[in-house]
Image (cartoon, rainbow, N blue to C red; front, top):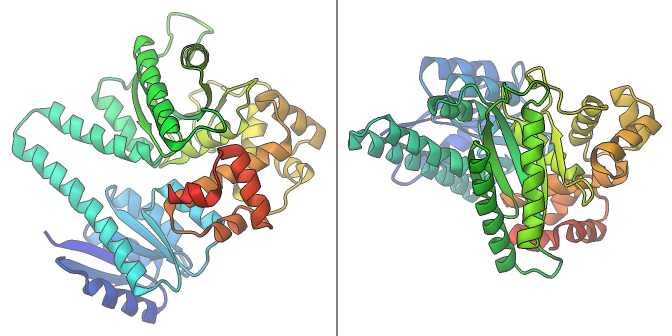
Length: 423
């Protein structure tokens, strides 16, 4: 089947070069279309569905980021690659939010572009084959639902879940009345634990999660990532217990999980949680990672709401949680800067001393340590993608000295950045 690829760049030479490279992809029947700006790219997608889009971020009028949002709305199954001369962390972060497949920094070589395109096209083909297999089977909707669950689990393993697709999945399962949550779990298996021990620990905690969540009446998808567990959970409301709503139920079950992991498995588990409901793209998992960055031994569970998401009228973050959420969002958007507590407090309209107390109350730690954990979490995302060298990641997340960055990374993750990148 012919695949439609959109190339959007305001520089004609860049478009021609990319077209020339993509035209040489072996064994592919492609229709290549070009746009000189974001609005033209959206119009082309309105005219006919696009399978893959290469988007320059800096374009006049509607830029690549805005165009990506619109393309996702028009073509939910579209795959996207950002191509830009600017390797600023904010762009990479927004790419993660949008679920962009790849991120190329100009000038990218022909080999890099060919490799990127090949990987993305293979993903497209795999999804099409799965869909075709479902259609040929002639089975009822349960089979199609199983295929969707398989795709969602694959996305969940990369923490790149599209929450709207997940909400549709839960709705088809008859769980539309539930509240949906994103959870990210980190496990401390000891400083001397090797990779095999860590993998086994993740497996055991995954099994514990599935048992505990099922016993609580939740429907959940739990998948193991490279160094953590990601979970999407549908939690039934406690309508019969006034004042004992979903957040309280969620906290009770997760605290029991933490206790059982320690008492039965000898493992320290830290959990970050966020609402999935009404949020776009992977934003809830960004918020869940922010929450995880605040987790400590004396407070291993932190619940936050993603920026801009509806919380269903229930405030998870009592005692200043909304201020902490805004502060985390601001810090996440300025990781490369040398922020002080006073800078962040001014940005969110709080006194430095008050914000410091809120951080301590929410996560039991100081501003400096919270900011450092956010930087390390962002560094892990960038290293995991394999597109950046350690030196580049160090700069993108605000560390001026690579040796210091490596020491801090090893302190939190137990391995060096280079080893983490190598897998």
